[in-house]
Length: 165
Ligand code: PNS
Image (cartoon, rainbow, N blue to C red; front, side, top):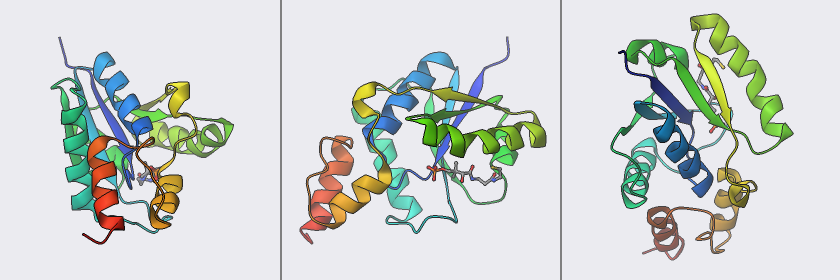
């Protein structure tokens, strides 16, 4: 039987508990999950891609998420080119609100038209419904405690960074 492969794409700047929740759910549904850091030209990045990759790997390991998850990055073109290259049939996106639905729907339709890759919208645990990377960036930037919203490795990294250590 062919493996069911999914890509969980995003900026992950930084990874949040909401991201981790979606990754864990996708890992339960698919044989292989590729968590993919994609540069979003519409957003000014806080962390370099290599840092996000390391934090995602540490967070996934610390959360004991299944061994079928790998982390990578993609800056070579369309997201669906990556999906096609690795044989992924689906993109998995977390949806917190109608705002996310409005933002994600055109991308999902374009991605399906471009390469026949489906998008699965996944509802995160309500506990994480208000968490976003942009909020975490803002709170961390102003010296606030972000540990309720991010995995341990991210909280430790941002706390150390905030104190300039
Ligand atoms: O976490 P984000 O910033 O909401 O993630 C958005 C992202 C990176 C997944 C989105 O910008 C994207 O898919 N970029 C890839 C470029 C692409 O393929 N664009 C054309 C089809 S939408």
